[in-house]
Image (cartoon, rainbow, N blue to C red; front, side):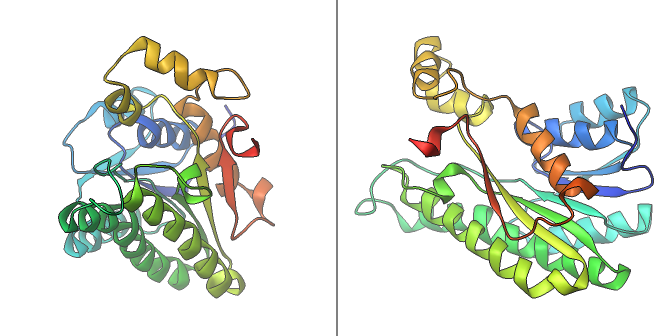
Length: 251
């Protein structure tokens, strides 16, 4: 695989599982040094990258802690000297319910992870990128950031806000050679979907039946979109929320 990111440094939050793990490995396969950030002290992603002959640094990080994020950036700089790419992927689905029954606790937790966590990450990533003349940030939103979903008020609100924050920051920093986009995954086979379906194969089949493409997506398919957005092939793309959803939002 072509080493298009040789000598580049990428941060991936929520790197222990699913889309985060797939994206971290995809960066490493292109030659990037990858900083892995997650609350889960799971070494699987780091081990996979090292088995490929790549370089990886794991940093225990809760994105709802500003101090943890400052530490993440500090360790990235002290170890690798810069930040070229960032994939702000960490997120939670929140507690299902209605706007009329959603608790303050559930609302705040979902917003703190999905929105404030992304903002804090961007804040300190941007500081470093501005000092070094540019970079690329990709935020993980959702098709729930583009359309409504019944029964998930905090999740839908948080993901719409991530799309808005992405567009705002893209305009603010375009002239500083920093591109900022969002990916909006559809139904992707991740631990989040496994929790939603309780591992029921019939439920997976029903989800797949709702996809125009006839199946649910793979984490690697989101990873490849992130890689494209970070590459020079996407040099004229910024401020976009790109649905990677098998056609779901076209219905």
